[in-house]
Amino acid sequence: MAFAGATKNYAAAYQTNDARIAFAFEEQFSVPPTGAYQAARFTGESFRQQFQRNRPEEINDTPEAAQAVTTQVNVSGSLSGALSFGTYDDLLAGVMGADWTDDGLRNGGLVKCWTFIERLGEAWLVRNGGFIRQAQLSFNQGGFAQTSFDLMFKGEHRQGTSPAASLLPAPDGTVLDTVKGFAGLTIGGVAPEGCVRQFEVTLQRNGADADYGMGHADACGIRPGELLATGRLQILFRNYELYDRFINGQQGEIAATVRDGLGQGYDLRFLNASLQNPQINAGGKNQSVIASFDIEGNPQPGGGTFAIRRFKPSAAAGA
Image (cartoon, rainbow, N blue to C red; front, side, top):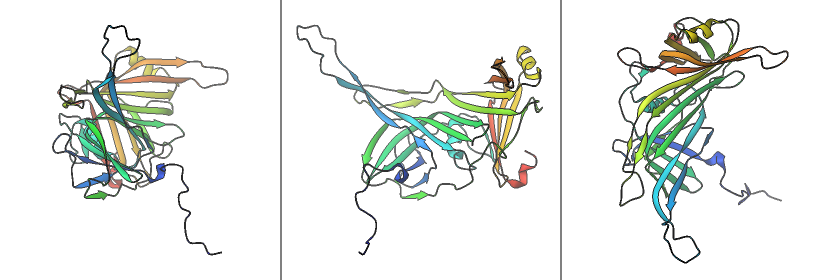
């Protein structure tokens, strides 16, 4: 018997491995660009379109609910991924409200909006007027560096062809791990005693939301809010150094460096932060005591809450 190639119609549904996501910066809010889009690496997404439906509470003798009407359209969700060098630099600049300058990024006042496109099967879902409400970077012992971006959009529609003139290939750098890739953490310029088990950064656009008006159900525009930087630290408890820092209300820089096998990576810096809400417990028999702290980011005198520096191997020695 001669075999003529792959079996047709074998799949019960569209396959996630065939999904593609790309994004492009909007020069005009909610107007999808027609040029090149940046293909994204990702481990999952949760975008969805929801209609807010309401019913008038009319008083009558009919024992049934009144006809529902659409009063608002919400499109939102998260893009999650494994962090690698250069993969999410544009989106990090978006949530920080700034541009990269000399490989440095510090929170600013720019408002950046995006169109995201996603291929599922034979069609493309186009989500326009996108704004990043939150970004999270997570580093946990025994794992790899993870990231997620929470977005809201003005709207979503389906079309048969991609609006992109071309797709820029996604960066192909090695995923940062937390073994060789976690190059250290300092608090107030000093490396604390004890091994770090967890370090998380949350960059939130506090107060960001959409505005709605009559005549259409989608958003009129967005309110960009303000940057709120918070985090989480978990460390093996060897002394009271960090606890005393919390008690004394000390503030200062909290920084971590992560890099890949080629020596390229990021310095992540809370410019003026304090440790809050310590949790230090003897959790059970034959266990090491672990201390957990929340990180509260605050602006330094003159402004500036969070900064990121990206570096190549030539600069890694001074990281």
